[in-house]
Image (cartoon, rainbow, N blue to C red):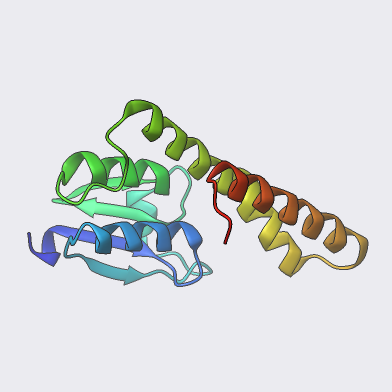
Length: 143
């Protein structure tokens, strides 16, 4: 598979785009990376993701897929070698649950801990710590 047939539109600071980049690397898929300036979105990004107008977007053989978790499912179903998800349906569902938890709970609170000020920062930092404890406990990770 040549890098010409797979393209990823992303941004260096996006955890969602990084997740897709890591998956492509783990599955040994060649791709072309297109860095997006999020303050000046390209016509390509607006064409490929007209609904949300955000990255990441994966383009494969001219077809485009948006939203990182959906992109990961597409990659997993399209390129079977080097699977990233468990084969067992229950374990696969658990992996998807924790990925969604990271997106909806962990990332917003962690980002808030870096961007908020004063009492609001303390509140989101506490929330981030609680979310990470839940994540590590759910993954049975002891560090």
